[in-house]
Image 1 (tube, rainbow, N blue to C red):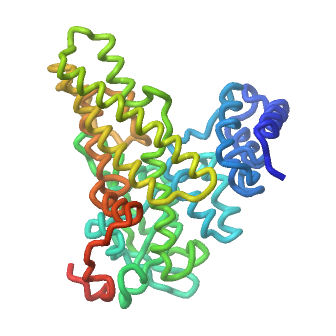
Image 2: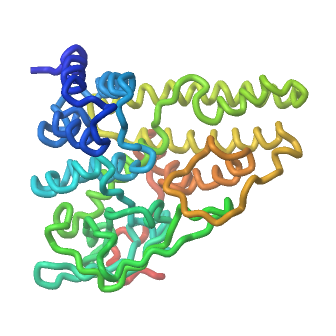
Image 3: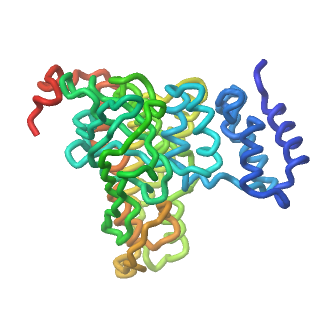
Length: 394
């Protein structure tokens, strides 16, 4: 039987009648909400959902928000929600789904992503972190880089090289890595903003049980594609209200500070406003597509557009503010849990936006994906496709 909006509204009201958000412990409330199938409603019954249409998620979220119920701090656990969870759902065993999804959604366990390496960023399939079988375990050694939130995380999604004798896409295996395990070392990477939300992670003889392998041995690339498709939607496909996000900040400054206005800046602001509205509407359509299927390469286009718009808007804001825009509020070294584009000044937003076209897949790589998988253009010649990973030049 198909679940309707009316069904969900009734379920939320019944839940709130027995779980007063004002008097119920926050974590207890979130656990109970998950168990009631009112977490991510499109997930299967018993895993936080009830196989309901994804499009109805807003009905549940709005009802809980209107009641003043606590949320699961989605910005802090975005990698878990947007990348780890759909991958575990798609490839995990029943035991893995049961073990990891509930504490992931409640925020009890924060996740990070161990994919990129110093020698395998844009070309992820060239990664060299080795995993060697040792009985019921795997011994993992290597280095990962640009890992957002690793210093806050208890778990990581990890891609490794398990067979160097086959072409690079064939010899990879995907694991769930305990970030508190012996041999895992997290070091901060200080950015141009002065903060270090990114990290480099060193793995030295880290022992991972085979029960924490996700998908078959050698099929890590297939599993990773699910993660990456969801990642690009998570970064670029978030639906904002009209004038939400950075365009709202710049537009407010324009309205509040008429002395800063020039005809040239007005033209550029209008152009950026139109682009932001176009991206908002495209994001709405993408979410509608997700409601009836899995994310596809269209998410790559959204992510490219999001990155370019953010960089254009932050540059416009700095120019609009003139000398004020050149000021920087605080260079104090921090290791934040989230990226806050709205809680800092224009200088911070301008510098941090430079990372948008790198994180979650560089714009150059994503344009190749768009060309080949969306537009159907011929792919670039790849001379390393059938060469064993161990024979590739490095």
